Structure formats: structure tokens, C-alpha cells
Length: 246
Ligand SMILES: [Fe+2]
Ligand SMILES: [Fe+2]
Image 1 (cartoon, rainbow, N blue to C red):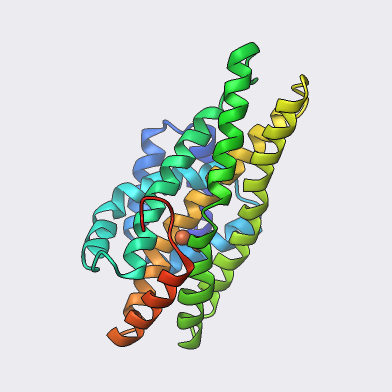
Image 2: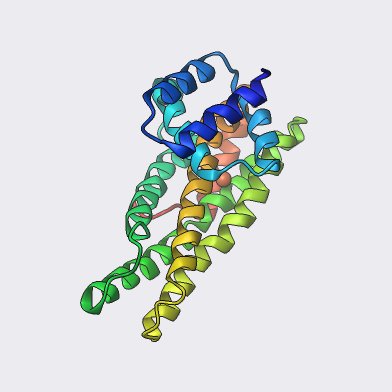
């Protein structure tokens, strides 16, 4: 079995039973013996073949257990005002919003009366908060990606840009469907809202994981001029930061 088939089989098992200890152990073993770049290309191959997002998510949590310490060491190696350090810190804020979103869209229906109203209001507001994270993605697209592209690393930023386009739509979807449901008394669109929210959670978690563990470390590795980083951080400052990260 080659590595792509091996990963596909692990993902299948994690999708069917996310509590399977054996599949989780196999996932951790697999990740320990797979370089980040190799994992990125296997993942891209599987995603093109339509691999389930849910399985990818479980793989991500298995991967986080393996690489959490590496991520922390990388973050700690950067000064707090380095633009990559701020991007990584903002990811933690975005991830906690995704945890809330996941909890809100989990039930089979939005409930009734006051419960329904408060669930939909929370989803509308959370959708807007996620839409407002745009300066984060703008700093990547306008400052970080061009700098690494200039050094000949074109693939990973292209994948990240395409994912930005995809999740911008999903964020607006969560906000707008929740607003529309608040205006009406019908729950017809709840399933669509829940599906949109779950898709966004899976996509954005995986996206953040790839940036923290692959793209950012590669960028810091290939851009070695401190003056260039200082100049990039000044341009990033001009775009602005998420609340709490100014
Ligand atoms: Fe990004
Ligand atoms: Fe990011």
C-alpha cells in the first residue's frame, strides 16, 4: 500500500469512528514518518479525489498532538511583533471562534422560541466576526505570499489563496442564512446553515494547520534578511490587526 492509500484508509476509519484508538495511533505513527511537504501533497491528492473533510479534521487533531510542541517552539523563536508571530497568535483567536461555531451548528434543529432566536443571533454575529478577520488574510495575500512567491515558492501560496476565496463565501453564508432565518419563522434552511458552518470549520482548521506547520516555517526559512522582515511588518501594520492583537 503506498502512502496515499495508507492515509486514505486511516481517514476512512476516522470518519466512520472518530473514537477509534487504533486508527488514531496509526495516524500519529503515519504523521511522525511523513515530512510536512509530503503530507501537503498527499492531502492535495486526496482532496482532489474528494476525501471527506471530517476525516481530515480528525487527522488534524492527531497531527496537532504530534506537532503541537514543534509549533510552540517555532512561535517562541519569533519576536512578539514579528508579522508571522502575530498571524499565529490570531489563528488561536480564529480557532476559538470555530470551536463556538461547531457547537452552535451541532444540534439537529435550532430549537424554538428564545433558544432559536439566541442561537441564530449568535451564528449571525459569529459569521460577521469571521468575515471581519479579513485584515488577517489580507496581510498574508498582500505581504507574506508575494515575498515567498518572489523566492520561487509558488505552490503553497496558490493553494492558500484558493482556500481564502472558498472560505470567504462560507463565512458570508453562515452570517446571511442566520440573518434570513431570524427574519422568518421557517427552519427550512437550518440544514444548509449547519452544513455551511461545518464545512467552514473543517476547511479553516485545516488551512490554519497548514499555515502554522508548513507555510510559515518555510517562509521564515527562505526569507533570511531581517531588514526585509522589518519592512514587511511595517506594511502589515498598515493593513491592521484583529481586535486584541493590535
Ligand atoms: Fe490564510
Ligand atoms: Fe492565516
